[in-house]
Image (tube, rainbow, N blue to C red; front, side):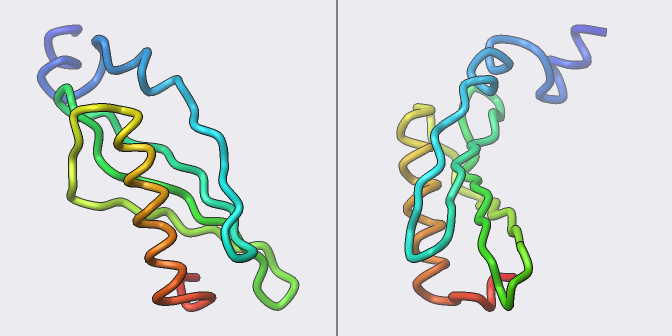
Length: 94
């Protein structure tokens, strides 16, 4: 079974890295939680954007095709892409 996990991206050294959670960042009234996805020894850019629209809590998960080798760089890139999306779309994200 572990062979299949490794073959399809589960298990391995990336599990420990995936458990490290980056701290949320506040930006223009939104909360950005970077959560890069381990994939084949690299990390796919991903973040959750939380906000309140008309008194209702909303959440959007951003996943990009970009992959980065270093987890810390992937966290920074995830925050940057989320900020860019907030700047471009505002509440329309949700």
